[in-house]
Length: 146
Image (cartoon, rainbow, N blue to C red; front, top):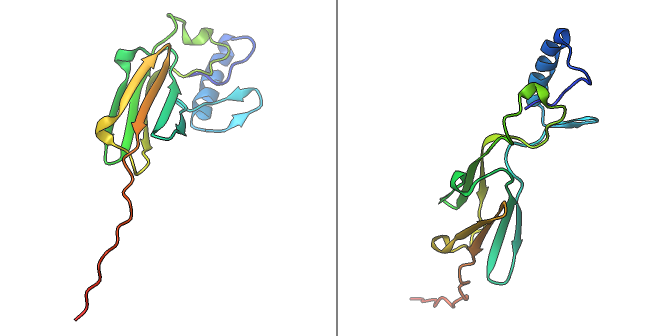
C-alpha cells in the first residue's frame, strides 16, 4: 500500500517513492498529507440488557472470505479485502483503504454464553451478537465450627 506519492511520477523519482513508502509503512502515525492506517477493521462494541453487540464495516469483503472463531474467551476475526478492479499500484495517488488479508483478535467480556454467539453479514457490515450469561445470585455459605 503506497502512502507517499509525488504529484508527478517521474522515472528517476519512482525508486525514491518506493523507498519512502517502504519506510513509512512500518510507522503507525498520522502525518500531514500522509496517512498510514491499520490493516485490520475497526469495531464498535456496545451493551444492551441481554447481550453485547459487536459491529464492523468491511467494505470489499465477501461473506465467504470471513472467518470467525472463538477460543479461551477470545474472538478472532479474519478475512480478505479484494482489489477494486485491476488498478496498477503506480496509478494510485492516495490509498487509505488497505487491501489483502487481515486478522484481529478481541478479548470477550467474562459473562458470555460462547455457545450462543451468532453473526450476520449484510451490506458490508458484520454484526456479532454475544449473549450474556445469566448472572448468579449471591448465596450464603454456611459456617461450621467445632
